[in-house]
Length: 227
Image 1: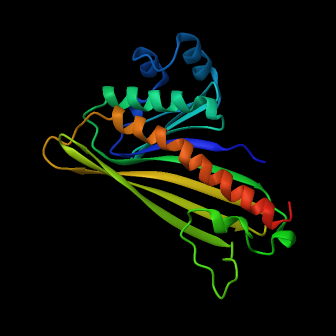
Image 2 (image 1 turned 135 degrees about the horizontal axis):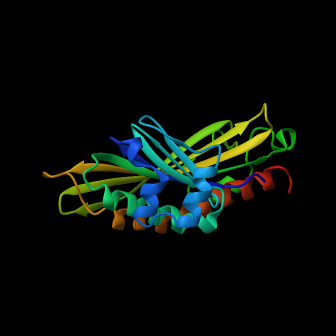
């Protein structure tokens, strides 16, 4: 099975030039040793349109319309969250539209054995799927949206939903499952800035539920293959 990828993507008006490793060190996001390593790496890019670097299994990317941090190691999820909170606590004047917590997993799949379905494991999962004439739903591409409770803060309402996407890639003979916990910011008064930390913490708490959904899909696929 391929590594699961975890990411936090923040949407808004960004200034990539600010996101230099030295600045991250200054605010406590990187150690001095990590900064030296990052600056020596060939993959590190710092410019007005793009900032990108990798540090200890964590990838940071900033573009004019988004900032993201990701890792293939779930052990780093707390660092992803703490770095996000740190950055946007310092850059509290940045106009933000929303953010997403993403989990993606892919694994080889027995296409012939699965025969285009996950059967019968999906029946017991909360996917909101409807069988046709008693037959299991086809697993080619499917998307399910789970509404989540809004978070109301002093000057913004955070609308939330969890999106589950399943894709059976027949060409690559792989099953891909992606969960996005989406957060949309709806300002209720000016200024639009608010405490970002509690919203990030709430998203991380949902991670276990998202991971359980992904695990369930792969267990169902295994049953469909006769495993």
